[in-house]
Amino acid sequence: MRKMQLSIVKDKPVFVGLEDSKRTWKVCVRSEGMVVHEASMPAKHEILQSYLQKRFPGCTIKVMYEAGFGGFWLHDRLVADGVACIVTPAHKVTQEKVNKVKTDRVDARRLARNLESGDYSVCHVPDAERREDRQICRTLSQTQGMITATKNRIRKMLDFHGLNEGLPSTTWQESDYDRLKELSLSPSLQISLDVYLRILDELKQARKGLRSQLR
Image 1 (spheres, rainbow, N blue to C red):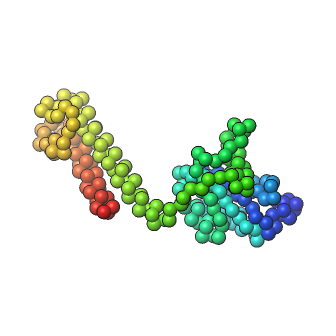
Image 2 (cartoon, rainbow, N blue to C red):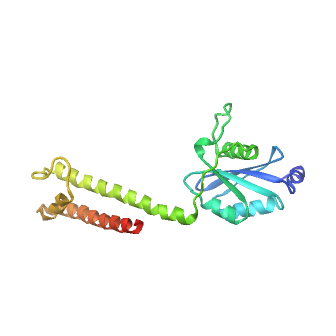
């Protein structure tokens, strides 16, 4: 950072736009209406923490990033460091109409500019315990999806090999899948069916446990 930039930010508020990805973070720092520093770093909290502490000692720091795949863990750690952090909905970030180019560096600049001007929306950040509890709901939904997919594979396998005689042509009940355990098939088909039925039973047990945990 140039000496002029150091004098600009000394003991002043600084506004950091952070564009995150799985491996790299791009940051743009603004103060007094201008960009005073930009950087690229590995996507690790301790590296960002060191960068902010060494570059802007004594400054009031505020960081903003878009809600996305990384969730809110970075918000929690920055707040624990004493750094104000805003998580903004990606679809509500104001973008210049004249600038159609989208890169991580451009996005970091845009976030920093919006943060400094106050032109942003804020995501509600649930506490860590609530976020972890909600994961059970997500896991239950995903497990139900895997149960449905396994049932579809079973029916498609039977259709493909002409083994659907006597079985429902439309909606199946749970008892219909139980009846499949009594089928006598060729060794290869029996192996495949047994695997599907075993997976189905394990998924149902997992679903039962998740439902119990939610209650």
